[in-house]
Image (cartoon, rainbow, N blue to C red):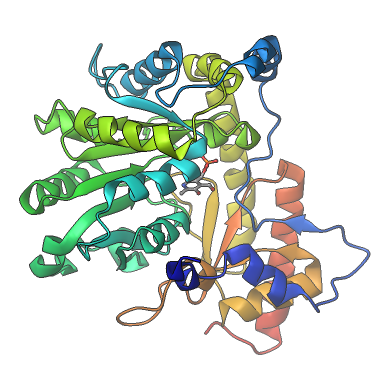
Length: 406
Ligand SMILES: Cc1ncc(COP(=O)(O)O)c(C=O)c1O
């Protein structure tokens, strides 16, 4: 087997299962899982209906390039969502459907990396685990850009030596960020674009939380918009990854798309022809109305806003908590070690959260995930409130018990 497989890290949820395996949570309190970032709001009925109406497509092999009606719906959504202007995105040459961004992110790296060249794939740290796994299996070297509170949870671009930028082949950015919820503004994105031009690397922007933000007046900007404002109308060196999983609460549909530089997209399309990961046509056709309709996405977003409004003040009574700009996570500082916190919280309150270190790698001056846990506000509002009360009770007991903030 491929020896690179041995370089993969255990997936965070396997680590969490091992951590909690022999803990005995109280039986009188129902389990509340805030560990996995799986949207759990009811999927819009019209998407399910559209899927059922197109079951005749079970009889056809889908093509790697996808259906024009989906590519065009994605292009029009990008133009609306990011204010790109009519026809800024060419649905024929610049868009490809993928089976969710996870699959798209992974396969993109396999298509883009030359394994003989020893290049770097740069990524935020902590990060969505697929960036690293994809880099390792493509034969590239992962390079971690810490995202800490002192830098607004964004990579410090000035801290990277020019020689390292020179070896960079793909820079992953994630805005809104998982797990921090941080958003890159236009100035930051312009700096990323300037670096990509100077050093000749691809910018791969994971924007799958683009429609989940807390301030209705401030939708997070995206990379394609920044390209246009920098005069890069053909999105040279840039690709963006989008998904219906969060926007429409349909993680099981496995529907997303990649869009950007037509030269890169053409090579990616060739790769996908052989990889055999074309999106089933009934999924594509059910995705068209989901990209076309913004009202359900706004209603979905409102549910997350309500959860932040309710949960942040409860936790704020006992611990430092920052309301993020976007996405559906709290990246909470723990009083003491994050693994111990997650285990003890589960044992005391039957609530699962994810230790920050499972999402990060120790690097340079420490581990940016240490001393934090990720809390996904995916459960129903009542459950999130109940979980926040249990966490608050647990933290105040611990602090009174002398564990103290560490
Ligand atoms: C940052 C990030 N990117 C990509 C994904 C994958 O989402 P999907 O494959 O459902 O589009 C996730 C899912 O949790 C994520 O958090």
